[in-house]
Structure formats: structure tokens, C-alpha cells
Image 1 (tube, rainbow, N blue to C red):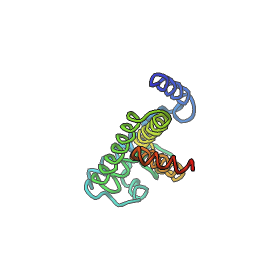
Image 2 (cartoon, helix red, strand yellow):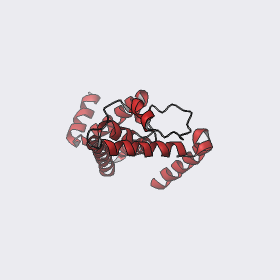
Image 3 (cartoon, rainbow, N blue to C red):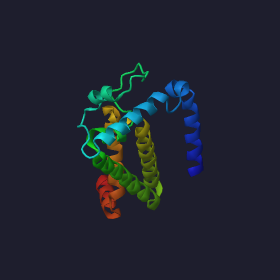
Image 4 (cartoon, rainbow, N blue to C red):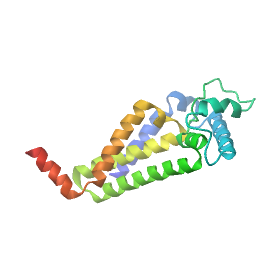
Length: 178
């Protein structure tokens, strides 16, 4: 099962790497690395409290170097966790990372311990959560409302299923069958 999942993931990555921005500029372009460096400098300036929630777009022009040759609008840091650290400080960013890791641990543990369809659904939700968290490290996908709402619903349903006791799950099934 893991082997087929890995093969499918490799195929999808290979297919997507030939299309769009990734195909033309690569996974991590030079401008993105420059923005990450600017973010690290901003974090060094205000490590505990950050610059304030929602201030990245206003703060970025003062951080960017004069030789930064990007024609795009940089209203996001293109790394959700870096942007959180810039805006709200390292302690809040650390809490977000700990919460993400805890949710992945709970989902993975429940997927390993469960059986049948429950195992498959929890494994799928765990995989989607891992990919979403990893993608948000190099892009701002979890800051897009439509994506975040769908991700939050899926993650919430997975965590609810993972934390449900077998007796409670049986009660729900018998109630639904009645």
C-alpha cells in the first residue's frame, strides 16, 4: 500500500514539475530565497512580538534590497510559518508548528491503530495534511481562504474521527442505522 502510494506521489510530482511555474522556474526560485532571507532579517529585528499581525505587505518594501529584481507583488512571504514569525514573533510561530506536528501525530497514530475503511480515510487525511503543511512552508497556500476552509474541515473531521472512542463510534453507527 505504501509502495503504491509512493509511486503515485512520484508520478504526480513528475507530471506537475513539467507544467506551470515549477516547470519554468523550479520549485524554489531565486526571488523566493531572497524573500526568505528578508523575512529572517525581520525576525531578527523583532523576535518575540513580531511586527504585528497582517503587517507583512506594509513591512516588506522596507526590507527588500534595492537590487531585488522582482516585478511581482509580494503581499505574502511565500512561507506561511515565516510570515507568522515575522508578523507575530517566534513564540506564536513555534505554537503553530507544535499544533501542526501534534495534529499529524494524532492522525498518524489513529491511522496505524485503526482497521478497514477507517484506516484508509485516516491515512488519506494524514497524507493530505502532511502535503498541505509541507506546501505551506514554501508557499502561502494555507493563507488562501478557500483552501484553508476546506483544509480545516478535512483536518477537523480527521481529528474528530481519530479522537473518537470505539464505543462512541459504535453508538453513532447504531444511531445512524436506526
